[in-house]
Image 1: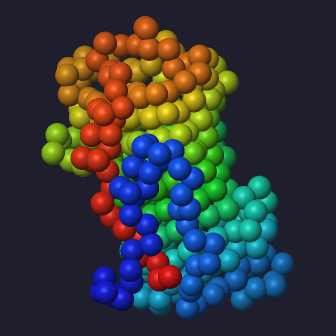
Image 2 (image 1 turned 180 degrees about the vertical axis):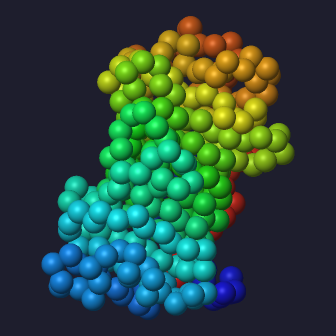
Length: 321
């Protein structure tokens, strides 16, 4: 594994969060001029060396230290894809999110059903649709992220139940579209969602988030900044998978379909004193807090700043510039 001196930090999440929150700047989060040492092309038509994404990932050496760009040409790739722990520094990139799709239809278990599973650190994905087409009725994960450091740019992530298993580690999602009906952003990672569109297809009061923080000392949580939250029918912002569940929405649009109470305790009233559910400077008809549950927080600018700065992601993606 390369040392930190071999790579200088490309992204410091804490800085970006403060930029978004304090100055609302449009700071560049990802250089368009990424440098890589290895380029692998996946093309179903035979124009590349590989016809499947998994074959390209398998070709990356174990204990990889070189930034590897896997360029996925347009097409629908019906395969389950795994990025193993011993293959860090991979950039998985399509060219057009609307016509470059990784798809599968497995269900039943959040750990075995994912279409794409990421275990390697310093992983990046962009311009890809990642979907699980199973539909309602069972757990059916589209994307599982258990990487220490991972970033997703302009991706579409869709399923119904448990769409995004944001399991553990420090993650960043920028300008992504995430869709589901029940607990569709779940897990115990420390993740920042910036300028993402979160869309509920629940028919009645399905929760967007199920954050799993289980101990008060854990620096985990889901933070939504400058996002757009919509739904086809009534939905809630979250419910506690873990007793210290933590979710914060800052400066985000909320459509009228948000349940007026906002948050659900999942039938666990004992969590009212331990969960941390906060909203700050949100807008839209669904952001009206007059009927919110009393155990959620209406945050001032300073309170939101303090929460973010105390608990924000400290990991750095080490992509060589």
